[in-house]
Image: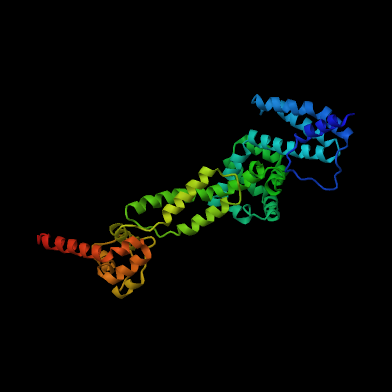
Length: 351
């Protein structure tokens, strides 16, 4: 057989395999004869699978049979290029199976339950571990808890599939893909663990951003929460560029300090009167601050806000809470505020 024809067959069979797929070094390279056999035997099954998926017939029995035929064909030829092709199509077909049975959506609902601690038993197992050994042990020991949870949240198709293919799920979750990681099931299913945290942060962050626009300064540690969310997402390439950009923009917005005197002043006032987590500034202590109670009456509010009449106390607080631009005009704005207060006092009716 001519060398050019052999080269053609080699290139044809290699195109079936993901070049990033790694196999055991002990597996020998295919001989020219094995390449011919692989090309002749397996190309029909590959073409059948391609036609079925291109036609959108991904949920039929025909696709399942085609997947089995392709992987069995390449698996029957014991050489490196055929093994790579087998591994490539195993991963492609697993992804197709998981999609057809809504496994990814089911896992997202499971992760949400674990994150929100809605099912007590989930707290006994480290399902979110990034150590693949610990993760597998957790899913193995926590199998009954897993099914108890998804029976309440997932559709019957997903549950039935996972009951029959639980070991396959564990393999996908705990064995990194040796192909294109960014399009792998392993990356997607593990990345979805970040979604409950990301969703909670983005909702709370948007609420906080709105509150801040009205002068209310939230006391929650958004910088820490933002960093934790970004760190989780950075482990995977599943998330779109648009999603990561939205998160970055929100984090940037929440990290900004008030840029006007009035906004900063109102933020300090609202934070001080927060009955859930009131702000506490050192220079307040000399005014005999007492624990906040609810409802806030006028007398208590007046006592609480005495420190806001202390110019140097407010200057100190604003150094911490406000943008430098506020400090640059502090004296001017403070004098203006005092004039407004005096004006309101002098015009107030005695009756």
